Length: 236
Ligand SMILES: [Zn+2]
Ligand SMILES: [Zn+2]
Image (tube, protein in one colour):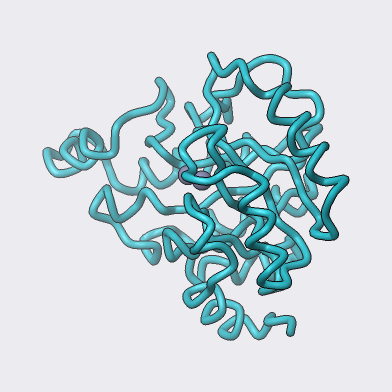
């Protein structure tokens, strides 16, 4: 786990405050070796080709290793993602739990929480749906990064330790089989070292990211360093 990388940073292409150039300048000042440009997409997004071209242009002007990522929400337990057509040139897809990916589609976390409280849904079944959707989203030709994994659990009134170890290990096994990555997120302060342990054991790359929406939070880590130390995986 390398603290001189930040593999999840937003720009004005979606909801970031700064331009890609500004984010890169910040990374250069901090001495980062790698920066992951990531912006939010959905099925109707039409700017991906312009975004890919912008990252390519800026990549030629910096020593920082730039990757071109898009972040899309998990839709359902088939592993479908809210992606547009025409994403050639994108290096990585960040699969995110922005809504709860149930069998019949994405559900708002507040609604799911209420359904759990009313006894209409079991917490275990909801966790299983999240694990299934995430695992099935991994088998793609592009790099997939599991983004801020389990960040949705607190919104459901659940904690990471409610996730069964065998479910986590099955997801880690699928990440290993498909060669995909998982991030530890400074912004969301998740996942925990305990959640990441099966991934680390299987050699799944764990990348550090801030999910910054402003340049002044890029590359600043606290939670991520604590997790890396706990896993004994901090590269200096
Ligand atoms: Zn996100
Ligand atoms: Zn993000």
